[in-house]
Image (tube, rainbow, N blue to C red; front, side, top):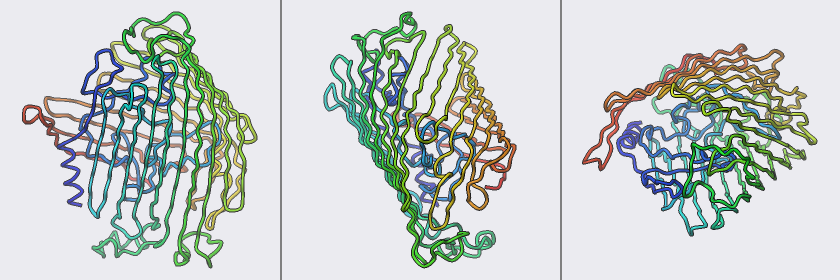
Length: 547
């Protein structure tokens, strides 16, 4: 524990990042780095996001501990976790299982960052903790030619843990590239993602008294429920997106640009064609010695458990948008048509999914301070037919701060995992009703103060009960969440306060009523600004609740 704490302190005191200038900005700052996501063509001139290169929060290397994240985990980096702050999960179209337990340890296509750099950019991070824990991050991007950029990201988490059969071994790798013609009218984005997550599963300690009374100093000698169980999650995905920009003028704001003057004519915009192919294998295995009653049912207690699920998916999408990355538009449209084909294999069963999903989005600048947005999609096909998602939002920007309101209404089939599943310990076939969502969100920002209220009303909510079996509520689940974030700087001292209050109408959703953290730290330059000193303390708290 001392080694882990010392390592975190050293990273807190001294941050190291190699970065380079961005050639997109009219007046580049060599100390800033920018990136964009794969839907950048719909974002207008604000498609670039500045990469955070400050050292604040660098000691929070675990994705679960990032600022604003509150997770309950199994006690070791890289293992399953669940958020203590409720957020509804819904997605139009087929989804086998959202895998929220390992969501933070996966790279995903929609959140992949594409850098645009004038010089090579590299970010290296290495953290070594107690019990031989290792955390490695390598992120690199550079231009091989003026028209071709490539990058790679590698992340490795390995930790034996304190208890028996608690080891994590997670590897993530991304290879990404971007090609564009010299006039920027044609562009190709491509990536390959590999996620491999291998956590051991001990089912918790067998006797609580061993922990409560501290009868055994060496945690590895404490008996656990499972000694051979292991989860293995493998994911390989390939993505290619081609974009053709219809106007002939320069893209990406290169050269002169005027963000204060909005175009009154609707731009011809661009068209794109994207293809995503993914293969996901989820395997759970354990030896016969673990068939001793820990699970409620063991359908085959003679042979070892070897439960596997395979999901293969191909998504093709064609879209058009009139959004312009070089100047803002008064009115923008985004239209897309997606075809999804998927295969699911569970032991001897096999399912085929075919879906066609049209979607649209409209953004309208009513004035310099008011902007309205609307999005919608609808699902057709052999399953999930009739699912839809509608949302609208209004954002006000003024010298007194920013205020936004959004309303979402959706009807969604639950993930296939909750409907049909067959394994050695769990089997079900549930004719669940579709889940309905009515979500209201209000948020405000004034300087360094962020606050908001979320009101959720969910009909036919699906959850896992106390026996780890899917169940569906008959009444609506109503959830209220109030959050606050305030950063105060006084001289070299900083006080960062975050808090979330939650209230749920049914015990099917178990979350702490109050969750929050406080960071107090001192920052100063040393050796004529050759390095930065930052030292402080983090305090986390949540009220008691049943997980």
